[in-house]
Length: 453
Ligand SMILES: NC(=O)c1ccc[n+]([C@@H]2O[C@H](COP(=O)([O-])OP(=O)(O)OC[C@H]3O[C@@H](n4cnc5c(N)ncnc54)[C@H](O)[C@@H]3O)[C@@H](O)[C@H]2O)c1
Image: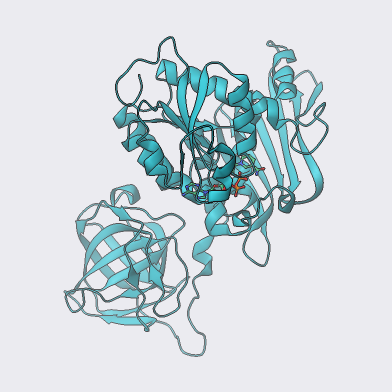
């Protein structure tokens, strides 16, 4: 069924392509090879990227205009990672099936929200894991004996990212790519391991970041329900390119697939992999199957890896040893839970790194993944936790740890006084903005603010 309710039976799916950068040519070529899907409109912010398509189909610089194409069945979302969420959300709201490039989103909360929205709306949401269709990986999967268990698998995803980035260097901006090699290449590698040994959970991870905060190298150890382990090696500073899989079986044999083998030349393997992407996407759309679960599974692992490193919260400065001595913690009680989040809240950090709070005052707790403590810094991405009543007067300092119900929530980043004197917004730096229910909060629960350690 297309978005306007007409049947898709007996005709090609009418698909729009949003984002005409490095990867778009593989999609365009795949459309040309397949009868089951038809490229009917394209969109990019750069008019020059649209030029080659102008004679053939409608072109747009705003994806919402493309989404209004009459009879549109689906879109491919092929924009920078940080734009996936907004474009996918609009497509789902328009009732248009989505094939989104990996990673599903840069923040796990956004990924969860997309999956929930796709389910609620009954819209197909498909994540493009192109390595799933790699001929050498599929051949390896096929030749593994079904009666000998896999004991371990190693997936290597090594490259020099500068060679893979387009003109826009968003890959090297942690905010825009999601963090670095873990956020960007991790999902493909995790999904490959999952294809061989099933759902995975994190055992441990080691992530190395460069001076700009981009993760450049990582090793991630995972475990499947069967007990089989997966080792994922990611590298964005590798001279050349290596993408391969090594499988160890219980009988002691070792099996290998070079995902680039037989596809000599830069990115040559992608030509056939993207045909596989579109074939499976079309089948899912026709069957009404899938609402982003696979993309979210990979994203949850990315999130677990970053959490295991204690990522952005460590960026908040702690107490100043020249000024800050010992202090009592500030105790408070949750009196109201909040359940929403926003990407455009526009709070602004006051110039003060400390605020005195008195017994009986009520203040609002707000989480953010932004970590810039500069006075006046605008805080847009927030999740609301709720309001607390202060039980014991004291001093809240930037860098204080915030604990609720025995769990550490995050670190005080600063204060926004847009509602003062009614209340302060106490901003708490976390890995991903979360709401009260997502943190398991309930009225009456104690929230404590205290110096680290
Ligand atoms: N480059 C690779 O090696 C590679 C491999 C596999 C998957 N991917 C994924 O494919 C996606 C695209 O990556 P890329 O390398 O082609 O990026 P790119 O920077 O080369 O291209 C992105 C394109 O999106 C356009 N764009 C940005 N915002 C837009 C918006 N709001 N509406 C419409 N167009 C917009 C840009 O103008 C640009 O043309 C990413 O999600 C990436 O993770 C990339």
